[in-house]
Image 1 (spheres, rainbow, N blue to C red):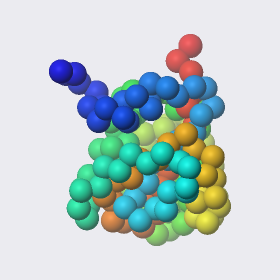
Image 2: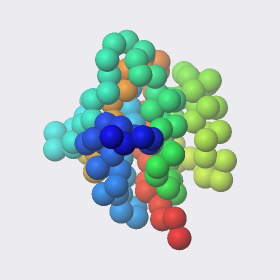
Image 3: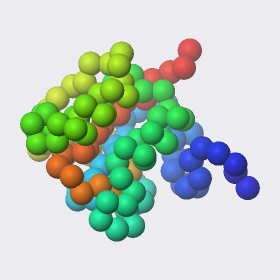
Image 4: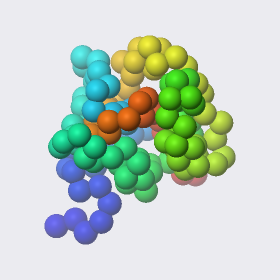
Length: 131
């Protein structure tokens, strides 16, 4: 039995398969996942699991070189915006309208659906390299 890290088998495999510049999404319970994008649905009930613990678990295993957020998070969910940006102190986030973020998610390798029930906690991440 695996002792640490991501225990959800399919998610662990998808993370291990990421290459440089691949993108993936961590989203809320209502984020539409485009057809053809594999979805790891972790949502159990409203608010469970929350977005930030899922993000933290993923970041413990993935090198990230870029992030994209919806512009709307800056005004509609300031607390979560601050928390997300605090996890990437060396990166400058790209901001796009939420509708554009939805369009961009069609190019993701996979998406992770959380149970988050707050406005605009949807994050596109671009995989980096560790060397």
